[in-house]
Amino acid sequence: MSTDELSALLEDFGEPKYRAKQLFKWLQSGIDTFDEMTNIPKSLRDKLNDRCYIANAKIVKRFASQIDETVKYVFKLYDGEYIESVLMRYEHGYTLCISTQIGCRMGCKFCASGLGGLIRSLTASEMLSQIMTAQKDNGIRISNVVMMGMGEPLDNFRNCSKFLKLVSDENGLNIGLRHISLSTSGVVSGIKKLALLNMPITLSVSLHAPNDEIRNTIMPVNKKWNVEELLGVCREYQKVTTRRISFEYALISGVNDTKACADELSRKLKGIMCHVNLIPANPVKENGFKKPDRKNIEKFKSMLEEKGITVTVRRTLGADIDASCGQLRKRVREEEDADIQ
Ligand code: SAH
Ligand code: SF4
Image (cartoon, rainbow, N blue to C red):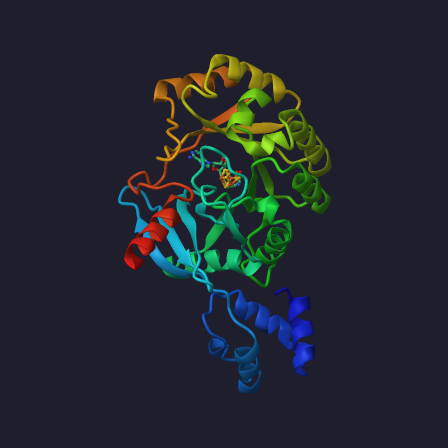
């Protein structure tokens, strides 16, 4: 809840509204129970206990990498559903990759998160809770957030925009919007709404193919909004926000890694101030896709660079924890099913 919403709640409780700021600070500090709010009178704590709950994500599995400081989490939510987050250590600090939905309905062919469809969207507090729990578990401050875990953030626009407001509140986690990236598979209507908010976050667009012919085969969302519409709205977004856009491109061997693809991609991105992030595709056993070998990834990178595009290849962190987006949750659910049978 925002401070305004807490004020309204206090009014409803017949309590003084000035406590809203105190409550907000407490709720953003990672507490598990209202009784930990030591400077709040017992009578108010009782009312909170009766009528409210704290939507904390509980750690069910924690996989810590032996080669770097990456930690992958499976969290359980109040309704027994599972989500994933990944904590990564960079030179500039800690980054948490958070989930925005349980499952996903976009159905991208290379992704494990979408295999079981969408179960439900996360609330803003469930997104915040992933950060608070990971901070508490490691005794650290998370300085950067990427909304790149399970789910399509722009298919959960209301909660994600509320999350962005709350997470950057100076009385709360106080993570600056410039330190936050939101990744979308290309929900054009959502990008338009996001442009209206004009927030200084980084927009990441999962493009993965330079044309409709290829993109239609791997990303069903392309049938609703094709490459031309998507790049058109990216141009508009950039005009409004003046922010550089990041394009994600998962390289899948034999699908989108040819020289022709690199050429077409560089042509289509002309005029957009952007950065291309190449992701060697993570194999998911259900789809049989493979990543190109290192040499071909480097070749694709150089072909784009020759056309003046800034390119990075995503570093593989926590490679010894054999799992990527959506796979840990799937594994925990399968284990649970096996226990029941
Ligand atoms: N739904 C949003 C954000 C979550 S997915 C989106 O699609 O952008 C985060 C990123 O991981 C996206 O770029 C997505 O395309 C990519 N991704 C998903 N599965 C992958 C896989 N098996 N290998 C490589 N990248 C993958
Ligand atoms: Fe959903 Fe993103 Fe996975 Fe596509 S890649 S299914 S949009 S989480």
